[in-house]
Image (cartoon, rainbow, N blue to C red; front, side, top):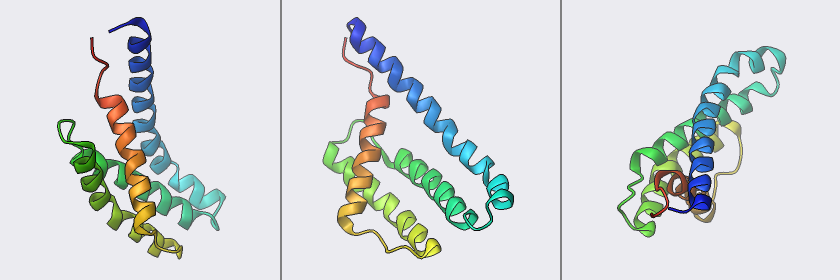
Length: 120
């Protein structure tokens, strides 16, 4: 592994740790948002809980040894009910299949970037 690959992998691991804690911070902030911004609270709470649930669902089905197509399908199937629930809770239009796939692709790319260290 060269110096650039090593540095990029370290950055990826740092972002993974930051985002891992971000969903916890977002959930921790719910009571503050509930009091300080009561009109925004339902949307914020649904988004924070939905994002945390989607990330956990994607992590639970992501398989580093599976093909990209297999992982994309598994992640999309895992997160679609969460996205539909979020849309229902917030009164938003439910996401199309294309949007679910794009979201799943973003999650997949994030998981792939931090899960696999660069080759030596």
